[in-house]
Length: 291
Image (cartoon, rainbow, N blue to C red; front, side, top):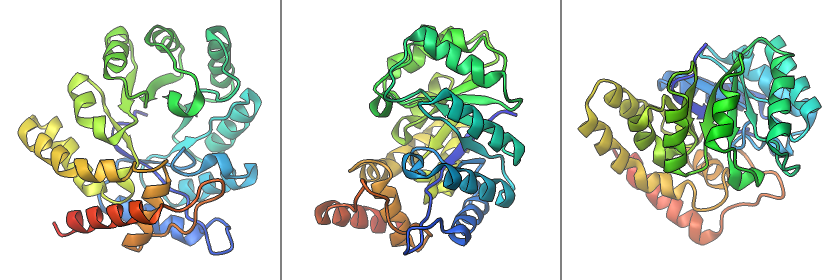
């Protein structure tokens, strides 16, 4: 199972009483599928996984795997190897097609610890692992050389790269070119340049609201219509910036609410956009939706 193309890093919608909005989550999946999404990621950073309880985390994965007709890459990472293994086993048992495993946060393990962490997970599951490097959140960057070593482990199929460092991303692809391993963009605004370097798609925040446009950009690139892909990239760039005007997923949940998609509130310690940023996002979204 390879995860390529436009993959939605899904929000987790909440009800007014701060419970998981099960029906809303299902409707959002239906919206994504109707608009050409290639796969979905429940319980990632955008899904507020850090503030989901253990049982809620499993519940969201189960809802997603039951409802989806596209592949499900379940967020199952933690700073605890034991918890990561348990969540990964659960995801496999309920039908997830793969797991997204973030670099352990807060602990800041050394390279030996990182290797042992991923080896321990691989031993316990039989579905693909996509690693997730996001140093702005974890406080730890996985080097290209370490990623190349991890790429040799059977069961680790790829990486979501959200370091924002194009030179690092280029080196990762260079060092893994002879391996059965692939790289996905972790930042919407870098999807097109990463595709040009050999990346295979994006795990996208913006896909929650514009999966069809992102799919059009990706398909144009794959077909060799680089000019069209570039045109779409620049057309969407103001929206990409607006969706990261504050910490993700604050803006994307606001955008979903503005569009009538299931979203609801954020969980503390995240809070709503400032009035100034809300106005910027709303005007950007309106300008885009006119097309």
